[in-house]
Image (cartoon, rainbow, N blue to C red; front, side, top):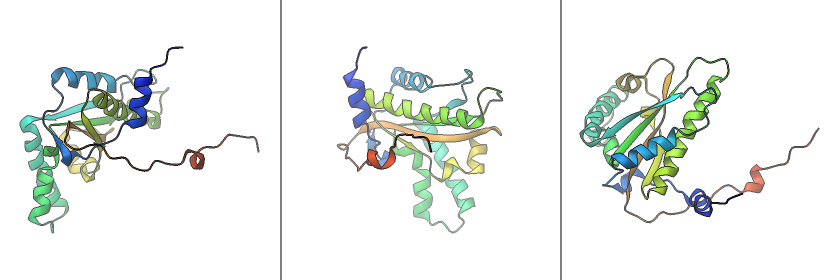
Length: 193
């Protein structure tokens, strides 16, 4: 059995980075393809590919920001200008944002829950791939992932929802560490009752 210590080290040290601390450049086309291909290599019972991608690069990030601003003003009519500016700049925090869209495909073999989990695995694989390529990354949802108006703006179908907005860029600060769960507190051996 071959061991890959680099992979283990990457998994044990991977850390999300706040998008507001990301800078250009983001992944180029070849690197983006690697990130997307890694995302698509997840467990997928029935080979359904119950996910898809929407890319926000260059000017499309600002154009979508106008959609976010307009929708947030509808949802929160009392929002002040500072908050509306924040919403308009949401996707400008990183040079690349990828919306991972979870889509349930009719299947006798793979229940909806399993398909949604597969989309979550896509997000995690993308984070790992971006980290391996030297980029900062973050998986966020925030209000816009759950809003019907934004879903319509994204062109989501009835069985689709945002699994995550994936932010990618160049890190500008050293990664900090946070406390992780105590494995002894969340792990037990199964035993018959």
